[in-house]
Structure formats: C-alpha cells, structure tokens
Length: 263
Figure 1: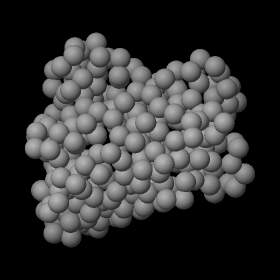
Figure 2 (figure 1 turned 30 degrees about the vertical axis):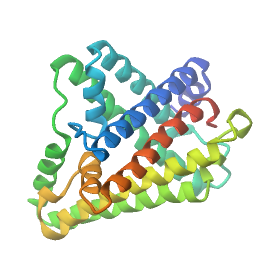
Figure 3 (figure 1 turned 90 degrees about the vertical axis):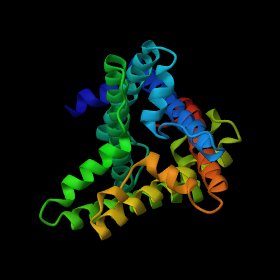
Figure 4 (figure 1 turned 120 degrees about the vertical axis):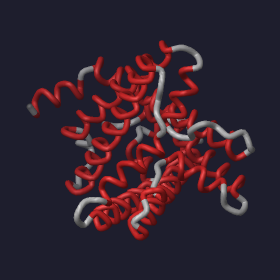
C-alpha cells in the first residue's frame, strides 16, 4: 500500500492534476472573499462560504460547478496521498506527522466542497450551511455529555485557528515552498493569508464554544455565520474587509503554492 502511494505521489500526472486542483481550491477562497466584501459594503450575499461560492458559480452554468468539483477531487486525492506518504523532506517525525494531518484535513475540506458542487450541479440547490451546522450542533447537544463534546470541538477549532495564524506570523509556510519557484511578494501575501484564515477559523471556534456553554445550537455556525457576525460588530465593515483580504490572500498563496509547493 505504501509503495503504491509513493509511486502515485511521484507520478507526473498525479502531481499535475493535484496542483491544478490547488488552483481551484485557491479560487474558491478568492470567491468567498469577494462575497464577504459584498457583505462588508452593504450588498448582502446569500452565503459567505463555500456554498455561497458555489451559488455564484452556478449563475454561469452547471458545467462550471462540475469543473470546480472535479478540480477539487484532484486536489483532495493529491492531499490524501500526501497525508500518507508526503513531506519526506521534513526531518522531524512530529512535524512531518503534523503536516500529514493538515493534508488529511485539506483533503476532507476539498472533498466536502466537491460533493457540494456535484450536488448543486445535479439538484440546483446548495442548502443553507448555517442551518445545517446548527441542526448538527443540536443533535450533538442532545447526546449524553453533548455540551462537553461540542466544547471539545470548539477547542479543537480554536487550536487549529491558532496553528494556522501562527504559521503566518512565523512565515513557516515558506518552508513548504521551493522559494526559487515563488515570486518575492509571496512572503507578505502568504502571511496575510494564513493570519486572515486563522482569524476566521477563530471566530468559528468562538461561535461553537458559545453554543456549548449556553447549550444553544442557534449560536453555532460555520464560515458564513462567522463573517456575518463580524459584520454586525462595531467597525464591522473594517473587520470583515480585513478578514476578506486575508482570505483572498490565502487564495493567491494557493495559486503560487500550486507551482512551488514541496511534497
């Protein structure tokens, strides 16, 4: 199994398709940022998350949803392979495992968005992500020890947010790139992108944490609710605009990483 995975990782077709998929993954982030900016400046988008992005894409035809979905499947498969046998350039085992876990998480995320794209292309509806999140939270809260479980999930999200933002502060994302193949401006753009995405995840963690503390699933939510929550705060336009710029910068980072990422 490991031998097959190693051979797949090195195969030029797998690498090419995976990197093309990473461009698609970046484009989804840029589109989410665009939707967030619309909310910040008073033009309320339906959803400011991956499902909102799919809704925007659907306006140009189902073929685009299929194209995005297929691209994300390529990216998910590539990341899944890296989760098993990637990052051999990292000498410390603990860091290598951490990076592989990150690839597994990206594979799940990309796979989920791809599934949503295919579902939207065939049924014509993306669904309300916030409502789905709240319904799932309500189900978990109804379990024995449900508040503790939701609280643990919130802590996990907050830790993930901290790791993502820290990667931006420390510029450690550069260690994952062949810098000779990346433009010089990737350092500031990458920092803004990783910090911005980490902050957005942090808001999601806080919302899930509040749902756990108050046993109220209505306080839970994903990216869409997190960004709308920022917009509702004092100086919300500036807060949301800053986060949107960060998410867009992460998308641009993905464009560069598609060419320069080490394996």
